[in-house]
Image (tube, rainbow over all chains, first blue to last red; front, top):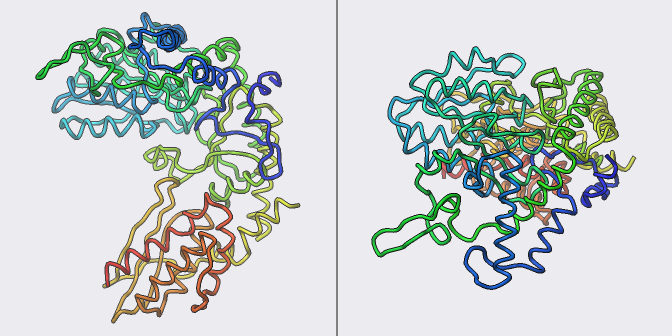
Length: 407
Length: 145
C-alpha cells in the first residue's frame, strides 16, 4: 500500500504541523501522478480540439479522447462506446436522464421511486420532474440499519412506476444496495432503473450488462480522475430514443435555418467543446485503478472499515450510522460524538492534520431520517492505511476530551 | 501542545460558556419579528425572534441547532443588541462582519463577550458559522426600518 500512496503527491505534506491524513475521498479523491501526467502531456503535446481538425494534433487529441471512452466502456463492461456519454459529473448525468428520458416518458399520475438515502443529485431532478408532470414521487423506506429490503422494493414499485432511481452505494450510510435484484423487480413492473454509482464506481467492480440497469451515472473526480468529468451510461435503445438537452457545436449533423439533425451516439449528447483533458485524465485514472484491481480496492477498504468500526466502538459516546456488517458497506463511516458538534470535531481534527467531512453531505432528507442536522464522515480509499485510522481515532479522543473535559 | 494553543484561540472558555449555557434561548410570543435562517452548506439553523418597539430592540431570543461557534455567537448577539436602536443594531452587525474579516473596527460600543469571537477570523471555514445569527438579526431589523 505504501507504493500506491507514494504515487499521490498531495498526500506528502504537513497540515497544521502534522502529516496529512486525508479521509474525505467520498467528497473527492486525490489524483495519482499518472493522471496528472496524462493531463499535462495532453496540454503540452497534443492540445487541440476534437472531431474537427484535419491536422495532426487534432487527430492525436481525438484519438486520446475517444480512447478514454473505450477504457470507460471496458471498465463498466458496456456493449458499445455509443452507450458511454461524457458529462461534467454524476449530477449532469442524472439531470440528462431526467430531462431527456424522464420528460418524454413520465406523465401525470405515473410514479417515480427513489430512496431516503439519495444524494441531492439523485433526488432533486426526480422531485422537480414529478412536480412538472404531476407524477408521484415515492420513497423506499429504510430499515433501522440503513438498508433497503427487497420486500420493501417489491411493495413500493407498482405497474404505475416508470422510473426507479437509486444509489448503488450511499454517501452517508455506506450501504451497498442490491442493484441487480432491484433492477429485476423494476423491469418486471415495466419501469426503467437509473443507478447513481458515484460512490460505487471508484470502489468496486461494476458490470452494467450483468446488472442489466438502464442508466448508470458516475463522476471521474471521485475515482482518481480530474474534476469536471463524469459518465452517463445508458442502454443504446434508450439513448437512441432520447432527444439531446444541450444544443450547439459538436452534436449536430446537418444544420438548416429552421431545423437541424443530430450526430449519432454518443456525440448527440455532447454539445460544445468537451472537457478533453479531463476525459484523457479519467482514462488514465481507469488504467491506474484497473491495474490495482477493483476487487483488491474493495477488499482493502472493507478491511479498513472493519478495523475503524472496531476502534471507534471503543470510544464511549460515538454513534455510527448505517449497517454494522463491513461487507454490506462501502469505504466510509458516518458518525457523531456526544457533546461535540461535527463542525467543531472537524476543526479539531483539521488542527491535527486530519481531513474529514462535516455537515449534511448533500442529503438533507436522510439527515431528517437519522434525526440529526449534521454528522461527521471519514471516507477511505486505496491510499489510506491502518495508521490513518489510528490517527483518526486518536483525534476523536482528543476532541472528546477537549470539549467534554477542558470546558 | 501547539495544536491545543491554536484551538484555544478559537474555542475560548467564554465561547464554550455561551454554547453550554446559552443566553436568551427560546422564542418570543406576540408581536415579535421572526426570522428563520439556515446555512445550507452545513445545516446550521437559527430561529430568531425580536421584539421591536419605537425603533428599539426591546427583547431578543433565539433557538436553533449548530456548532459551538454558531450557537455561542447567537447567544452573544442577543445579549449585545438588547436595548439598542435599530441603526445601532445594524452598525453592530457591520462591526461584527469586519471583525470576522480580521479588519479593524470602531470601539464605540462595548462588545462584551462578542470580542471572544475574534479568533474565528483565523478559521475561514468557520466564519459563516459565526455570522449566521448576525445575518438573521440584520434581516429582521431591516424589515422593520
